[in-house]
Image (cartoon, rainbow, N blue to C red; front, side):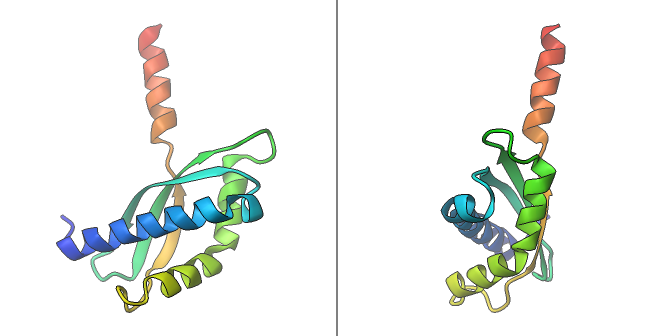
Length: 115
């Protein structure tokens, strides 16, 4: 069960990460549309797991390649978060990014049920 503080920090990180990805998608991520679906923060506020929904425009990259680009930019993302949230967070948690495949899974189940 998450504490109220964990939930507030998770919502703040989700909002700011979404804004960062929206602003920098063309420059760093080859135009992929990146949505932060959920952020989970550890009880000691040292680690934040961010689940990303990726929509690839064209056939430039795969989801795994875009995730690698995001992991390369992880240091810059954390620095951006520290500047934006300096009045709200003392320390920005370490970021771990995952691909959220729940939408793909739901589509697969839906197609199986239609058969």
